[in-house]
Amino acid sequence: MGYTQQQVAAFCPELSLKTLGRIESGETSMTMKHLRQLMDCYKLTLADVADGERQQRRLVTEDVRAAICKLPERYYSTFISLIELIAKEKAER
Image (cartoon, rainbow, N blue to C red; front, side, top):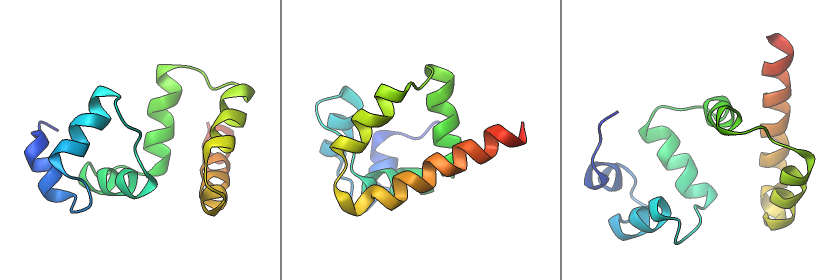
């Protein structure tokens, strides 16, 4: 969308310019709070994010297992919802 890092950081109150740079460079992982704010900033849905990941590479069972193991338990339901959303969209295609 052509936003600068400064513009994105200004739109996302929980995401400092320094943290944004670290996320982009791979120095740190994104939190769910950051993901939600970035999705709002770029006007994306969970389906958009999942589709973008799917276009980059195909998810395999091991990827899903690894992701689940790294998530705090409080995010399990969000993760399951994302998986269900992906499956629903795939079924509709």
